[in-house]
Length: 201
Image (cartoon, rainbow, N blue to C red):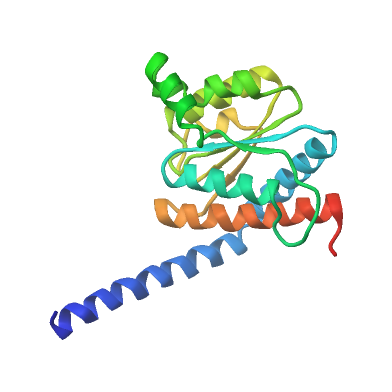
């Protein structure tokens, strides 16, 4: 490897970190996003306090985020407390492949929503583009059941916003940067919910 090649790669890494920092700074200064996060936390607090549950779904990296977020609620984030009912709809390969095979991939989350969702629950749908057909189908099903719909997406105009009761829009059009904002926001929201329901120790 030449020195020029290594230098180019190092610059690529540094550029990603700079873009990440710029996007985080934009999110910190985004009043609309901060309000969305507080509203989302309030909805989750009310729902979970009433004995309802959180359902989470996404595709690809957002599927991993769905599992990550559900784990923070069900296990713990900052301190020991009782588990909060949270289910990632991305984890059961038998369910995903059965629905995908029998009904099509567009319905892999919609079928689960209709089977597991109940009025008063919260559905957190994650789509960086805001256009994923299986996410949109699940959001529509959730609304029909009386499940509160929350979206995590990017700053592009998308049909997802119209089918969400609340929507957090990361200030970026880059999928990796949007995903970074999503997980930071999810941690902040979970921390607010945890504190509100259990208090710190």
